[in-house]
Image (tube, rainbow, N blue to C red; front, side, top):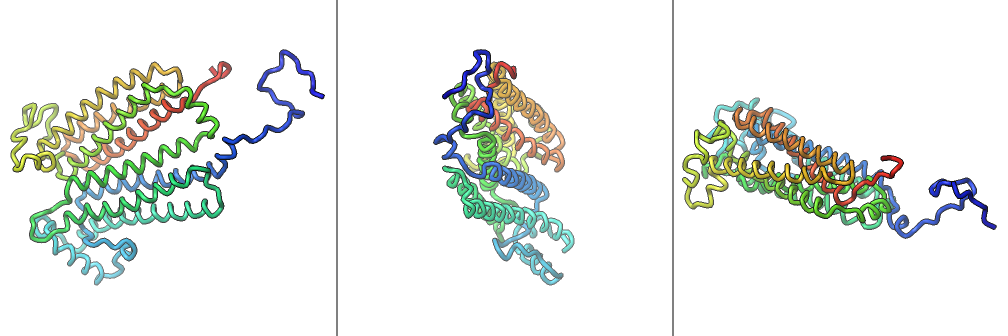
Length: 382
């Protein structure tokens, strides 16, 4: 016989006599080590961030061509004695970068750039190992939630593609007798762009795993479609700006014009279409490449302001705060971009510019996520 209840009793209040809740289909389908997988993805996220930063420093120090071979397994062991070091140095002496730019280098100088490139590749190997061991462990324990196996495999697959793209990039600069002293800028942009794609997937999965499936399904009903669409557009604009930044870095275009807001004392830099055929200017003409990066940056900031103003009208405080964070990061990035130009892309400013780009990317993703899955507050909490 059921117990009588007071009409003043809170609906959500439970009592020891209450029967246990039945597990629904949603909970059954979502069971698994969500917290453990999320923690594992957070480790991968941090490692990918370090990978991007070290890759940026490798480029800024012109160290990327110091290892002229792709040895995914045996390359994990660095030179162990002077003979090994001399052998690596002799291989480097065979490429155009040494012949044209770095004949002044001693073996000790070479070791410095070698360690940067070796460290960059080694981090990639460690990321692959952490991913493989983690995935295998969760799979063997049968702790992967329903529908998540493909997502987790995707991260590793993209990582494998990234390794191949990395060598494809380096190969473009390991030449002899062709007068090439750096990697192809469009290949560098592909490499960096894929790194941000991988980082984006990991960040999105971390956000999804931070809330239960039941909560996500309920939150989806309150999706702010217009804000989600606008933040998606902002994310796409940010990605294009990242690719343009890689093109700038690939040809050291950031050091070609160091005045702002003009370039060489004029709005459009001199000789923007100097190279033949014309399409080469969009990849190899430092003035035009930097000009495009600047213009797209201005458009990105303008649209960020528009999206931010829309975000402030959200009915959810968490979403509003997320878009405030995006706008703050974009403002910092704008100032850093100007500073990078004025100081001719000095290493410490340029790498900070890249680090804040990571922050902008992730913060836009988070704001977009909250537009799709807003966190509602109850009347009592508000």
